[in-house]
Image (cartoon, rainbow, N blue to C red):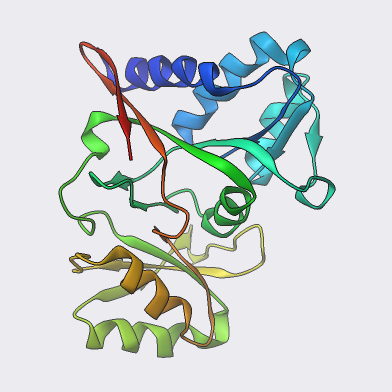
Length: 223
């Protein structure tokens, strides 16, 4: 099966975690787009969705699914999102699509986090995928120097020739050269640096279940 077919497979499999009448937390990215497409088939059975990005909001609305602002909802039953990497404990690197801050917000609002990914995203130790960090622009150079002390190389993410601007009006540093053996400790440390909005290591908001697309079908990992 192609990677696109595997994404479709897990996107459809995630529907089993959607409760009738509920408001669904929806993430961002190419795998989540497959879930959104599948969710459209049961839009008459749910109240709507809370989205982690403008791109996902537009896709949901185009398919006729009502999108609530996160401030309108106290708690969500489930949040369904992808990952750039996930380890065997359910810790993840996320933010390849630059929506990491809003993804963490919606994940924190949800009782259960269902990660959907193809099996290439499962790793023993986080860090091969560059760690995205959303930063306030005036702090970017100093934060890059702090990562250098940890052995990482931070590169400003660009869109064309200009810095990419997130939905929150901030910039992204992508950090390579790190091996993250203590995801919770790393997330806690970096989040305390002045100017960091969010680091793309999801340890406090780890996955509870991961649906992995594999040639033989969907593998379910429970953490």
